[in-house]
Image (cartoon, rainbow, N blue to C red; front, side, top):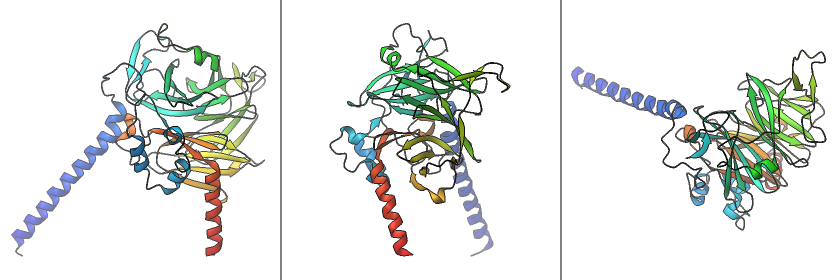
Length: 383
């Protein structure tokens, strides 16, 4: 082959490489940047309840390569409605507002699911506007019929990374912040039931809003044994969970100053626990603390820790860990079921997610424990 021919081949390869680089860069720019900053126009001005990216069959097929997930989520659930799953509402259109005070109607097309809680009647999902234009919301889904009931408009635009439910006092908590200070906000279950978007186009009336002492951000939360647990997400370093007490009326117990350097009323933790980085949610099951971990396009995981007086939950080598699709958010335990929520179905993340999960999945905790016992026995046999 002469020099001229070799030169032509090199030029062709370089041009082809440049085309590939441009295409890849364009895709990443579109999938990771453009969709995160842009909302497509709204065709309808209601919250759509049929927001699924996949049909139920399509969702199962998409997840079919995740054998463990299929076993935990879908086996033995044929007699349950939608195999126990709940379509996340509002992924395409969500009816909301433009101001904290309300009054200005709007439709958001970039709502991103974050928090998850389950009451006696409802499955609740919190979501925030990814472009920061609209009020955050809580979707209310009927637990028995699996049908969308309504959206609850929250004051302002908090990230609402956490939802919690106090069953004794019928109180729903969500995470918020003001001027960079972590806050826990409560609304009564009665207020949720009575709320109607069309009555004045106003956000729901809150019950209590209290700043949280001793934690940088309230990224996720849960309610357990009379206390509100609030966790902080860190990308690359260990983080913490703070435990706060509530009184007989279901309100956070607060303190004013008392040598803590506070110039206003705050809730002060009873104690702290240390956790691994990239935690997105927590729940309790029997004698175990469950943490969900996720960051970007990396696989998510749920880790089962034995509860300890040392309150140190960072060594996964001594815990049970399960791998799941990317972008898992909050988890919630009810009975022997683990409800899990993903944000991969949101417009901002749909193009950049290899596995899009547009439903709340309900996993069997006994099956997960049986699976871990079987894996442990196999390891012993191999050794």
